[in-house]
Length: 150
Image (cartoon, rainbow, N blue to C red; front, side):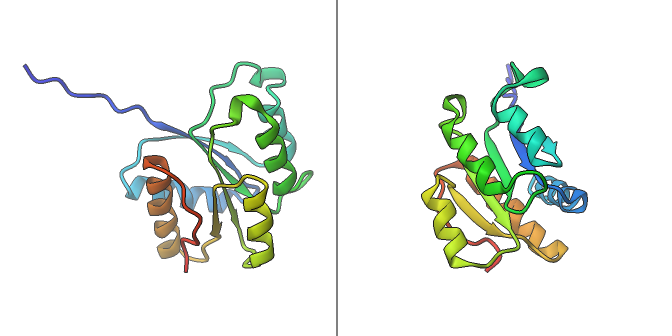
């Protein structure tokens, strides 16, 4: 008798104010063959409500990975990262920062605040495919800080 194991989709929380980047990210994840339940917030205010379990997010499922843009409206990615790291229910959830910043100082600061990974935002579809591969590796095992587009 054959038993097919059903692999649950990874729950990825994406906090990103650019819808186009999210569409390209979804394409890249599909190209990697990943089953992903993507939760997307366009602004930091909504993301903080999720992190704080406020309102409709009171019993929201915990993501397997958070992909956080550094430059958001209302709140910065750094502010949201601090809140995530202070939230006990998210203590074991890896946070990957993705940003157009190439600043080593930004990377070092965010890693010291608890980010597990830093990715420079891609500028083209091919680089988004690299991001998809990096996320696949992050979901598969331990995090190692690197820059997926270099």
